[in-house]
Length: 240
Ligand SMILES: C[S@@+](CC[C@H](N)C(=O)[O-])C[C@H]1O[C@@H](n2cnc3c(N)ncnc32)[C@H](O)[C@@H]1O
Image 1 (spheres, rainbow, N blue to C red):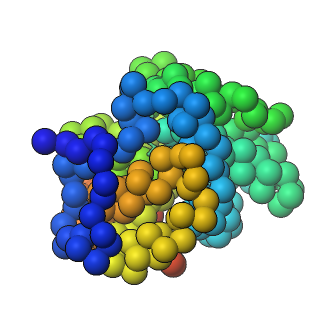
Image 2: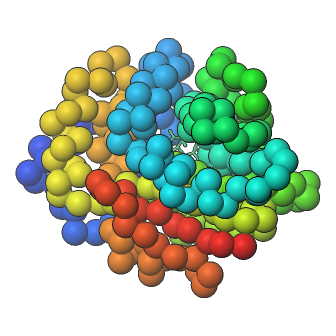
């Protein structure tokens, strides 16, 4: 049975030995308070900037996979509130790359939040990875943040197959690496940024659902590799 509301246990009592697949996030509840949800999407932009490590993954994993000439297309699958898509166009501009970013998410509430700030070079669409594959779309690089831990086994297999079909150069999916220290650090620091949002509860649940490096390696299909990046992060990478 999945747990929707209520208090999460004190962090010393939390069992982090295996993935807590029974936990769901408060923001996934279709009946959650829309004002709290809108604040949560905005606040996750700050949290992602602090913890997700994408600035360095942009340099090490996206830039080398961009085409040498012409405009590159990058896809952010499961874009949520859109902060990674916005960051990629910003970094591209400051590093001298011509990049168009498309952020997609099947959840209309996410696309509504993301579309409130869509700078030049970014478009947001309410679509799933499967719909993009069916439409015959292709992108140089496909990325996602915090989607892998969110999905069940079958959904994840479909998501990764879609990503492989959509990417002409590389797929890079980033997520939390589950550990006692990641959980403890987030439990201590998240109250500073979580007032009036689901950021604390959903972040702690996400850590409990997330993979260790070995678990991710075992979960990935052939052609994918799992990489540990510091601190508290893993990447699933596939070269086309
Ligand atoms: C935990 S949220 C992460 C949102 C955002 N990337 C972030 O880091 O804040 C996972 C998102 O993946 C989306 N998602 C799930 N399956 C998907 C699929 N097949 N294609 C695209 N998005 C998907 C969900 O709707 C959800 O918004």
